Image (cartoon, rainbow, N blue to C red; front, side, top):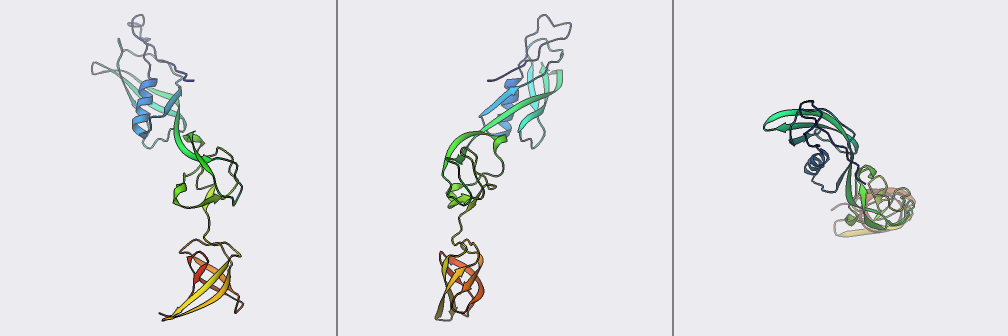
Length: 221
């Protein structure tokens, strides 16, 4: 529920006739313009102060450059009437910005594939950088609660090959291709350097994971 406090005209000369000044609308408009997100709530503005405005002035709001609006925020408010400054205040307000973000559809444990759905989440409840789930197959890097935003802190791309997986080790010698059976000693994504055990020679070699189940090692072109 939106809780709003207004600034009332309190200067002795105009106290009985001046209209209440509601700055919450102006503060919200400022946050929307600054963030480009129109799903914004101003939950509380706990402030009253005297001013010399006789009517309803223009309300001009400023915030610190780079402000993230994660909860309690300080705003600079100026009241201008007929081109004349009639009030200047520092106003604290509680701001909530909402986003539609991917969240875990169910509780997901470390290593499990992530099932997601979109949900409306307050910005201050998003811990870390949101990931693009369409960019690959993602698994939980640690336990994720149902409804929790999916960020890089809690998710990682599923490796193309995992420790213990069988792989083919290939080496090119001109037109000749030599192959051997191997086993992954590390997790790896496509294009990464990995360590594998050559089962034919009982040695450890390094190479590039060029395809799921295929590691390319040295050789000569």
